[in-house]
Image 1: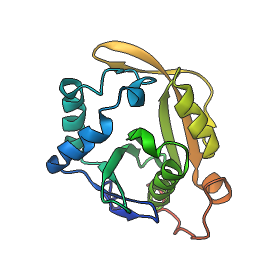
Image 2: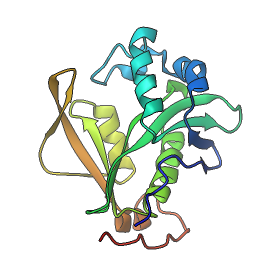
Image 3: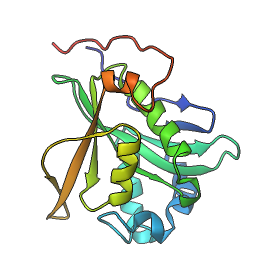
Image 4: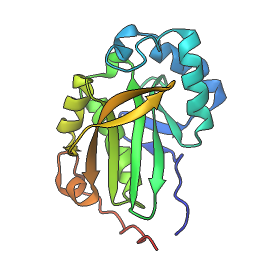
Length: 193
């Protein structure tokens, strides 16, 4: 199977996602410098420059991150990325996502997720989203876009400390019939070997 493009440029009516660049620092930090964005995250002080910088550097070096640009203004309003593609089971994660608070409320997040899911389902059968167990806002957002909660609680380590997460998934078949459905049909992903 050909390696999938994890840094595509994806365009919708409200936003465009494109590969992140080092020069995006100022625009992305401006979008991230609001404490309310990080209030439900494990790293609640990520709105501070010295805390956001390692996050930004990791995002750029991931090789799979995208910045979110509002089409009407050309302003960077957030970021998201693909992660941990498992071709043997046809699964990939979408995560490390945030949007500036003025773009909360559904339509921007829905379009971002739709664009990313459309792309992911060209090569994967399932997309997963790890959400901090106590992040109620993100859990509600996942339910609104058709995410199905997997049984159990999972954990990830951050600076040597384990934090509890829940995992939502959206299967390709569920996406084509769920709340983010679109009239576009996708080619069947190449089966894993």
